[in-house]
Length: 422
Image (cartoon, rainbow, N blue to C red; front, side, top):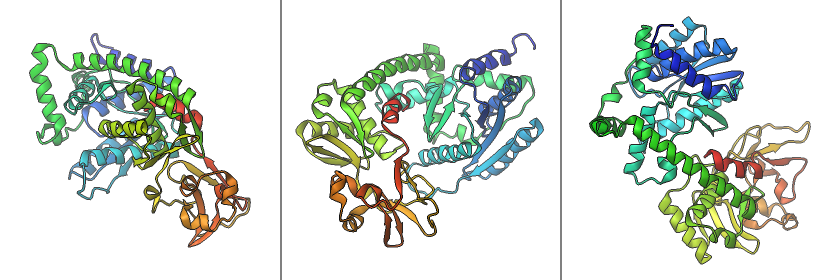
């Protein structure tokens, strides 16, 4: 290997990031840009040396005329390297809302489904130190707190998948130097030079601040230090959650006195995590919304937010699903309902025409023995039931199981442990 070859350090970063929990099957997301193409070539060599099966995915959002050709280019490179490649297409943009946020969520959802179907141990992403710094500045402009300003983690679990970022300590220029030295190609997304996009404007600001020592490296280091503070707060939150919270029928029950006895930041973390966990939401509620919720808890008021309801009951503060948020939420009987519940049919059951929806008031009216379950009506109405047309087939939580069972895919252990991986 030539002296000073950037591959030496980059491969070492990858090895340090991936070796401790090295998966036997690993995915890598490749758009065709310089960062992801560098990661592809580096992982190809690393995986071959470590006997790891590597799979490549490209998401084509269909938002630019050249996107299909770029995905095809990645496929050609993968074919030359002997790697399996798949292009996933998103056609969900309807012109409403934040395009970049919608595209990002769709991208991760598509890749997660792809990875789960292939049984992959994780998906590697090509985020760099430059991405860390740019994200820090953008969130700083939005008044973010410790969570928002702290560094992206080298490993994060979301959508049921481990997302791995082995190049967070590498710079964008370093990756392009690696590609250039080996005469490996990549494509430049024209939107990377379009000042209409916030990240492009942030890059210009960082370039201007570089002479003051406020560059990507310094900001990434600051974000890393804030990540250490976040980890300490999360550890405290886990400890308090184990003491004052429990999971009942998919709802989180908190001791309100214990919650209010904690410092404001711990209260906010406990309650916001309970809300996002119950709602299976990708994001936690906004800080101003949480301030209102904590005020309601202090005053003993019930309220709804984030697709959930906060109810003060004798047994504690119940965080459960809001019935209105579940209207129209349906799934096949062999799929997760509301991203949380799994229905297990009796052996030999006819599954034709069945769907899972909330029990609702209609379902409760068809279950005369529901009071014997010990569940409150507000809770019971949001539990899963099996329907065929307008006919209620089974409602295990309401005393009408008919051989069916309802299982919570994620229980109390997940509620507590996921505090550390938000």
